[in-house]
Length: 590
Image (tube, rainbow, N blue to C red; front, side):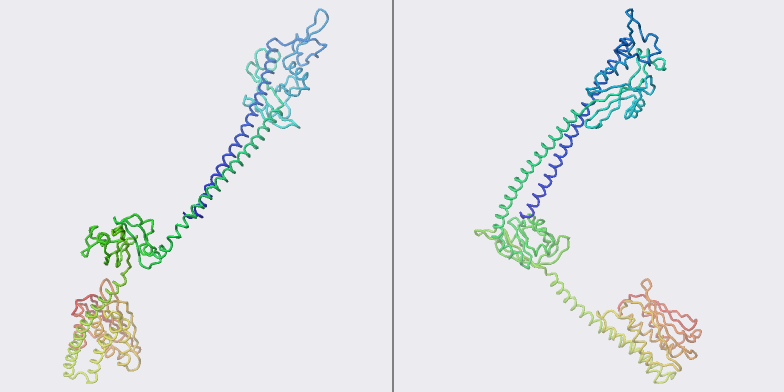
């Protein structure tokens, strides 16, 4: 256990715990405050509705009794009831009674108790019988909402130094109400207006503030107290982890020397128990096989080795030299195929040494190192020696064949000399050019890296340099152009190509440019779908009809060499002579 990692983990846990505790306390505080506010509203609404119902009860009692009559010496007759014929009644003793309607009665009741200033109610309407009932201030908006919805409307506000709860509820026309209001067109069930109630809720708000204050204080104390407990618990856990780390450090120090030796070894090393399960690996093995210790420890060692015999067949577990070393108690070694994590394989020389305890093998220590490079070098040396023998044999065969070709050419050249058509100098120069084409080919072959392919562009460049020096044309130099693709041809084909080019070029130099001011020869070699196309063209006078069928040495050689390549020969006689030879790129050895 690493101390920084474990303490960092504990820190993360405690940070998360403190965060959750903060969210819980904050949520509880918000819920408590919202509940207090909700309770304030419920209490204020209950108080307002109680006042509203008491007001309605007074009005309903008075209206159902047809109103209340009182003496005019204490009550001024209501001028807005003058349409009622028995508003005023004269008694026999001379005193006069006047009708007090419910609205007038309630208004006088609250004016009588106006100093208490705890509850005030009044009737407001959009169809006024008494102008005093006109809505004002907040009542305008409240009355509009009540008339539209038919439901009560309420809100709280702070007025001067006190808090007031304002409530307005619809007031419906009942049958007794028609005595005073029938002339206004009302019917039973119509909304006469609304009763406005204002109550003083300062004491209720004070209680809410006290609850909020208590909630703040209680939550803060509880929050801080639990944080202190968290801190104490955190310090105790850190102290315990520190002691465990110190003990682990002492234990690791006693093993570090042997561990460092094991891990610093350049060889790959792993250990197995008596059943073949891996018990440890070193860093060199992890780097070589790309496994981590966690991926291998506890797994069978067969995961690392190919475990096949010399014929490639899977071996039995008992035939594995690791298990044999454990079984016999003797160290063993062999060349084994090891498998990396990505599935790639390599050869390794493996040594298995048993671990002996009281004379009994309890496991084994296995070491190995990669010998793939060594095997590859040995294989390369063996292959190089084999190729050397093959190439020497091939070279001997080609030299023999080329000497036979030279002999044949000289024999044909001798027959031409006997006919007397050419001078001795021309005959020797022609023979020289044919032999030189082969010599230049061998020169390019010896410079090749694998002695089996030739750089055709380099070969053609040397041929052209040779032609430029050896053959001349009266009046001007011959211009040579080449277009050579990178093509790998067998040695036999390249030598034959060289001889063909020699015949075609020397024929053009000797016969094509008698009347040409700026002579040029173009040589092209390209590949097309497995076939090579050799093209030699000049801008000379062209070829006379049936000239290619004449029994000349040059034409004989051109036809013969084309047949050796299993190719097709064609001529194009336009703006000079173009010779095209198409042949397969792969031929059997001659």
